Amino acid sequence: GFLYVLTATLMNMAYSQGMNAALALIIGKLYTPVAAIGARWVLNKYYMWLEYVAIAILTLASMIFGYLQAFSPGSSPAWAEDVNSLRVAILLVLGSAVASAFNSLLTERILKGDKARYHVQKVRLDASCIVSALAFIPIIAVISQRAQDNPWAVRPIDGSCPKSSVCWQADGCSNPACECECGDGLFAGWIPSTLGVIILALVINTGYGWLVGKLVQAFSTIDRAIADAFSLLLVYFIGDPLMNGTSLGNMCLNLVAFIVPLSTSIFAVASSEMQRVIQAADLIEGKTTGETEVTDSEETPSDTGDSSSSPPEETSEDEEAALSPHWVPGEKATRL
View 1 (cartoon, rainbow, N blue to C red):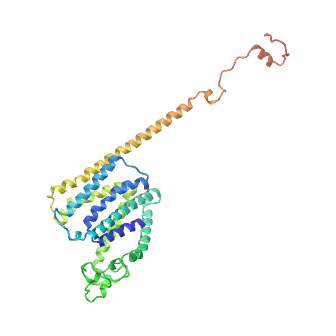
View 2 (view 1 turned 60 degrees about the horizontal axis):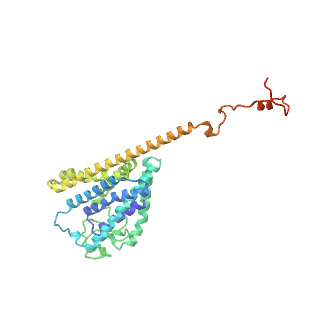
View 3 (view 1 turned 90 degrees about the vertical axis):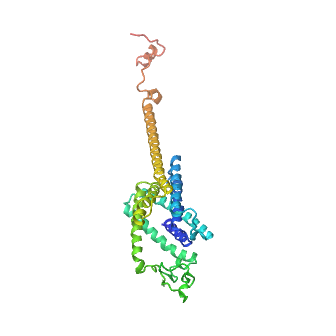
């Protein structure tokens, strides 16, 4: 719960520093290699060098794809002019990606280690997230000096209020020059004009979190991250042309996009080879154990110290006479 809330908090703080959504998506792809490396400590899971190569190719391809899609060559977005704020925002996104990776790994460990039903596990995790979020609200209000981060401060509640408005300044809503609608409280932004969008976002996020948890429980965090990379292809080749009427004439972007399924195939092949190696090692170990047991069972009785089946030793005539009840000492034995 704590890492989940930390991830969301860092990302929201990055957006408040002027981070662009496209750039946040590009930098956030660091999630996959961090999760692969972190699995070594959290889950005691190791990957082959070929799997690491596939993850690196997939991460770089996704970053390049997002960059080429968001920024045309030679363009200079207005949000990138403030270099200092942009550096802070990039660091916040990187921290959010690292926290998200370890949150997913710990979630996988909990889901696979607990024998309860999935919906019970999910409710427990969501309840811990709610508690952590409520604990973070006063902490963020103390750390941040911005009115929009303090739920008890009077602030603009309509997204149409321009950022250059005096309403966003300290006590700006009390300024006579402020023309935006203001309010305070945790649900200050829940106004009729935005209520539908908020409810839709809650439904989508809830369904997405449920499906992601189920996928992580059945497979792994890395498999989920690799599958998530296909969302770029889905949006680019299907979503944008249908919804926004965008063209697919950029061959450079198209070729970079096809790197994603190819690197995914490399990872799948590497994973299957790893499984074959593990199965072969188990078979060799089982065969060695069986041969050792057979060798132990075929040991000779003298090796085991059992003399019950050893052949009888021959006795001399004097020894036979000594065993007789009629034998007199000093008398030599005579065979009858």
